[in-house]
Image (cartoon, rainbow over all chains, first blue to last red; front, side, top):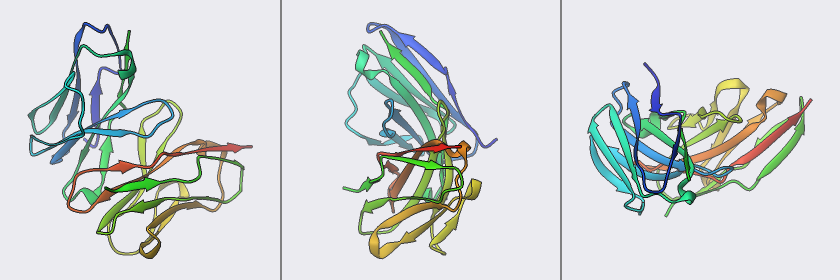
Length: 113
Length: 113
């Protein structure tokens, strides 16, 4: 299995809702990532987990809450989002050393209404 | 802080033309370099990467890139583009000893038959 799987593919949520994005990889990769990509923009790093511990938080608002239950799973819990949070959320994982490459999932297209 | 610059924001070519997309980064230490492609409506795919060794790297779909350390550059080339190469191209840099992968602003390539 050489993929990063993200669910759901599409999500529409209200500003008062609570929802979660899920990401799974079975490649034995050490690190997992959340990126946010707005239309016609590059992906922006949000969080990095290394060995299931949060190692990087790029000053992301607390309405985004990451969780890494085990080495294969990564969640992003969403609460009280704003319409400007609508974007494509990408999950990625990387081998060790990271120079060997990052593998990206196909993303969750999130719309906040 | 590391940064990545892609000066060509939008490139328009005819089929069979040669392609070169620029990528410059600012980081003085060891780097790992990547080019990703994103076809319309699709997820990021790795074209090629430089980790170590030969600075001229070959990737998928006939693409290649050359790492020139003295110029902090990692330009992408293809001798003869096809209509199917129409996509967004992102250069990305990982500074050694970190997990961060930072993307350039992207270059939109349009190839006309």
